[in-house]
Image (tube, rainbow, N blue to C red; front, side, top):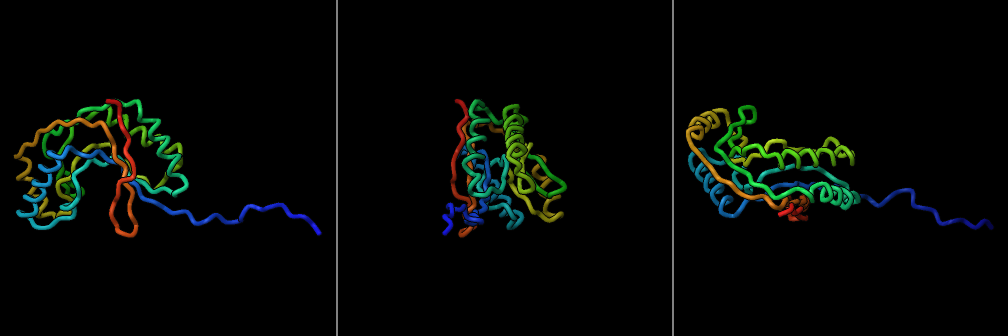
Length: 194
């Protein structure tokens, strides 16, 4: 009789694919103002795709196999832990003619640009490929998915309006998609130096 060594299984247990979104949350008073803007838009133009979305600034979203989650977020934390907290300045309304989107425009920030680059470097280093969506421009969506007629009318009205606000960013939020409920749930946060 031949003694056999213990053999590794030929197949791993199935790994779950999880969707993550990293974003900047807004102070509650600012989020409330933006919800009121969305409500005003709905009353004027009717329902639209992003009317129930919680106001936020997306940094990136991506898919990860569960077994990679710890390594990816450990590396991201390491890359960002030295970044200082910073101010974001909202300086009016912006318009995306191609996607028919109205948003709050945010002045360019060196820290945000660097942060976006760090996420991109992490993506490259860990070979997160086609499922990665990053944002190099910070914006807060008011309305998107609009018809051409509604977009053009709203654009002409919002172009005349102002919206100025400054807020401090000291933390990034990460949420994961709950596949059963179809909703994002808190996963972790990444603190910046205060």
